[in-house]
Amino acid sequence: MGGLGARHLYGSALGKGGTSLSKAYQVIQRFSEDVDLTYDIRPIAPDLVGDDGEALPETRSEEKRWSSEVRKRLPNWVEGSVQPIIADALAAEALAAAIRVEGEKLFIDYEAATPGSGYVAPSVMLEFGARSTGEPASLRDIACDASGLIEGVTFPTARPRVMHAERTFWEKATAIHVFCLQERRRGDRFARHWHDVARLDETGFTPSAFADRDLANAVARHKTMFFAEKAPDRTPIDYAAAVNGGLRLVPAGDGLKALEEDYARMVDDGLLLEDAEPFEALMARCADIAERANYIRE
Image 1 (cartoon, rainbow, N blue to C red):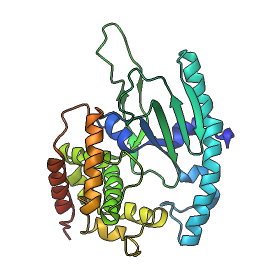
Image 2: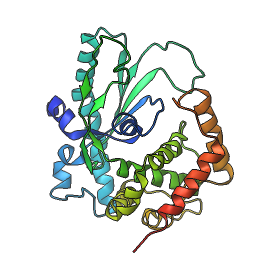
Image 3: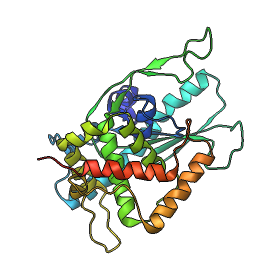
Image 4: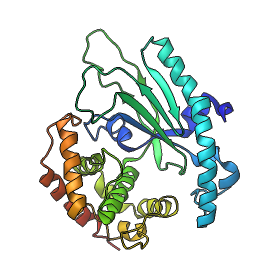
């Protein structure tokens, strides 16, 4: 897989998630130590996908075979193609940082300037996935955050391919929906998804996301096949129902308590580079977003 080379790194990998919202769309103003990237499943697994434009397996057993094969191929590509590019860039700039690869993730470990609370580790993670096409996506101009702040210094710009903000909304909204139904946390730093959805609404991206029924249902089909989840009663979570009138964005019970605690940690550690709204206000906004998303016009 190392033979895929740098050309494919830039041609088939695209930015998504909070990284794209922050850098490509300027929707959010928060620190993000993770860089979310998708490698188009079609070039990494053409023998599996074939001519299927949506790149979706037809059966659960086929999904397991696709996922298993991607999990084998993607780490090889990260180690063989991505790691050398990052290592050469660090060496060229004489930057004191260490690279480590753990499966589909590449970490750049650095020395922290201040200890902080430990909520954020002194490491940048490039997290790759390769179970979707990442579409719709397009090229976006990105400037360095420090551009214009230091007189006489010119910073480089980039023009990566990034997932459209409308798809990011549905990706995050359906992930939140699962949390609300399961009422349990998985890992840390999950409050950012609610913050990001609220900012997408604030900057005007939700109406177009609500209106794009093809996109909403495409995300639901992809989640149903690749990210099947079950409710506490062991029934499958219906993503199609979630994007067609049944979306939940505010948890209850223990889930709400865990979310409030995680949000407080995020605020206390300074991850939000702007004034943080009260948790109750954030939940009220998300409830309103869900209500509008669920008002499906025929």
